[in-house]
Amino acid sequence: MQEPIATAPGQENAATPSPAALDEALAQLMAEPAYGPGARLPTERALAERYNVSRGAIRAALARIEGRGLIVRIMGSGTYVAKPPVEAATDAFQTSGSRDASPQEIMEARMLLEPQMPALVVAHANGADIERIRAAMVAAEQATTLDDFEVWDGRFHEAIAQATHNRLIIDIYQTVTSARNLTEWGELKRRNATQERRAEREAEHRALFQALYSRDATKAEAALTEHLKKVSRNLLGM
Image (cartoon, rainbow, N blue to C red; front, side, top):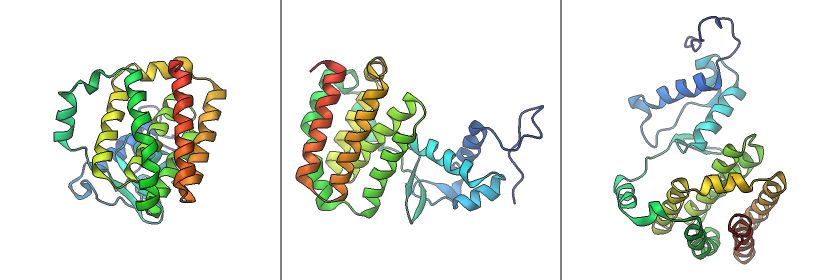
């Protein structure tokens, strides 16, 4: 078994490393040549033994790393190093006007694009796709900070886009996601955040997931459309 992760001076007797130290250790592992994009990471048990920590600590660290888009976890299969975004797509985004899109433009694009996704998800999604959507939804519900909730909210919608298995739609939605990350979108959400609105969004996500899980495209489209309308009203008064 590998030596425990080093602790800071004066903390040599700490029972477990800090979350940041564990995240850094896992990042170093993923940087090794054996763990390139698409590679499967060791099991939670193996990682816990490797770093002399509990499986719960490993599970929490993997959730944080997944929230940053660095890994993909598939129930019944394992944890995989995420493939990096295609450089050409990133370059195209950086040279386009998308990086300057306003929140209103982002919502208009989302209203046009996202309600069309459920039909493709119902037609093409496999069990792993549905599980990724569910996992993101649950992680958002369990988030203890607004920033973490927003990360998993975004991952939930990204997982739906990926479940369409339509590469063009996935690429377009990545542009929408990038625009959200580069505008005042985040600050706008923070100013309008309340516990009541978060609870409403969680309930809306649940209804949407249940419709997708039941393979009911019509119900899922209606649930997603209503969800986006409420987001638009809360953020923009539209």
